[in-house]
Length: 396
Image 1 (tube, rainbow, N blue to C red):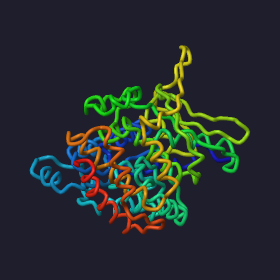
Image 2 (image 1 turned 45 degrees about the horizontal axis):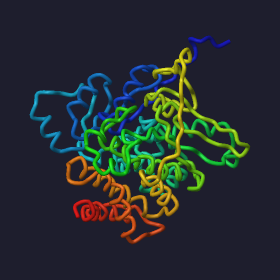
Image 3 (image 1 turned 60 degrees about the vertical axis):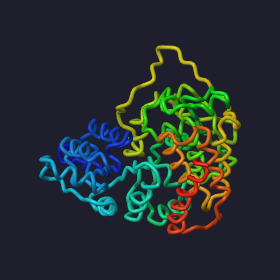
């Protein structure tokens, strides 16, 4: 008979976190800190917030820290700060691919914001790593190519976005052929009750005042315009191999129901929890196991009220735009994503109006040379083109 002491302890899952100093990155480290016997931060990357990454390195003792901003590296070297002796500093964006390809890495958390996150995700998939994907732009820009690479390397993309994690969990209730549609929930952001006239006058402070989630500025503005939901529509299209007419959006202000799946027989499966990103992060890192959670729990000893409302496409034209891009595929995603990133930056800089963000994205979409089957180099070229083109529309 084999006793418990004869069974070797399972090694912790080694996690590389791309974008460790952002909201998803810091939440991932919180999850790891609560599960040191099962999870280990083996590598982290940061861009401009290198001092914060150095602090993280002293707490978690990763094997690697990748610093992608040369100016931040130069500023750090000018100080007396040091890394832990067991941690190696890798400098330059190309070193992200080197870190995620290391044999020791088991899971890569892709949490770099924007199209900049595509390179690290691609490198991780090429190396056959499981990717916990928090960077929705990866699939918005290159969904078919990325999913084909994951299939070729026989590895998995585990969604971290709360909405896509909810769908992923609910889909386990039936077969793919039994799915009628998925319903993405949206808080509606801080401007959900604004009239069109009010939307034209939204200030930066108003747009950043999200009623439920604490997020970075770019994604908070995306929530206010509901462009985040447009991007999630496109992401869901490729991640779950759905048709655009199988994807619907509802406004759910309480942010308790994170998304739903409706099956052919009329059954609707939903995933509920208080708004806390640590839950979908933990699920993505430890799938298919469920362990004791580190997130806040639902309090069933008190009353709850849940509202669901259809979005108004006239007030929030990002929703029909997202469905259109999901249907078109090809190069539609890359130009809309690039246009949105620049338009949001222009709004945050005070150089364009809130209601011009989505309008500029549509204008760039309608004025680009559509290609149904682009290569990665084609996507890179059109990303750069769209970033320049959108300024003609936001600054006009």
